[in-house]
Image (cartoon, rainbow over all chains, first blue to last red; front, side):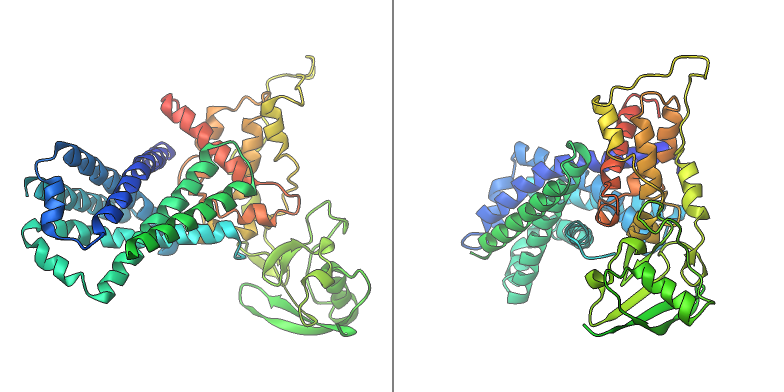
Length: 113
Length: 104
Length: 238
């Protein structure tokens, strides 16, 4: 990797962080609201089924996380495990793809209910 | 190096990040099985699981707080120690407040 | 507080051990006084560095009770617990012998960060007048007093975890030059300080800022570099 690419990763990390700051705040507020009096699948799905706004919100959330988490782990792997070879980046791309796939599958799941 | 505030904030930020990165694939996988969601939700009523949920919520709040600290230090005009302390305190308040709210 | 100190001093190279000495206490005694006493009166084979002994040159920097400090400006009373003291060489640098480290890598990284001035004018022209109260100059001045003692480099955990990381001192110096309106290196310096080995590896632990004996904040300078690199990247210039 060269400094330009590494700078791009840093920019993506900070940009996704800004998006996540908003998403996480909404998500935490939703959790606290929803958890009162217990949680059922019916309650969750009643909120998300067929709801375009939630679909868009969670899709954005998943995309932002799929960018943010792997780049964050990249530093941890490099600094605490000494893993700095190219294989680290391959593994993280796979992780990002997995997160995006599982996440969007989940978002569609609760949208289509 | 020595254990000073900013360093502690970093450790919390990093550890909570690792915890969240481990949690998320499982979280997505469970939600993807929306049809069996109620069965899963029954399992989550166990006390240990509730504790885990609370820990993850605290981790999320702490990671958010730590992240706001980093964004402030990197993008706002430099104000030295006040920023670090203020944000660290903010993160704590957010984390604790949410933790209690969740426990209700 | 008793009349003497139990001082453990690192002997050897990367592999070695602490050796214990009994050193008589004296009023206003500094850690440098202690090390000097050991070398002159107890064991002449002890290797250590110092020069000005008044807190100007940074040569006497060592690890005292786990913390990197200038030993000439560290009073024993302030740092000793139970009349004990542990003195070791600076961390994150190869040990030549005992308390002496090999500073070459520290200065090599300084050069790799393009930490030296590149100007345009010659002696045949009027010198460039910089207004001291200019925002750019004030920011440069906030980090300009660095004497290259390597205390911050020794305090930094990212340096310890990531051997290629240029480190707080080199990056701080690069920042003061980025803010120097006379300097012409521009993008070349930004490219030198960007990336995994540069400013983007800083995680704002602020150990450098905690440790700096001149109360500089390399963290602030490195944050400034991140912003400058961002600007250049967004303009497609990087």
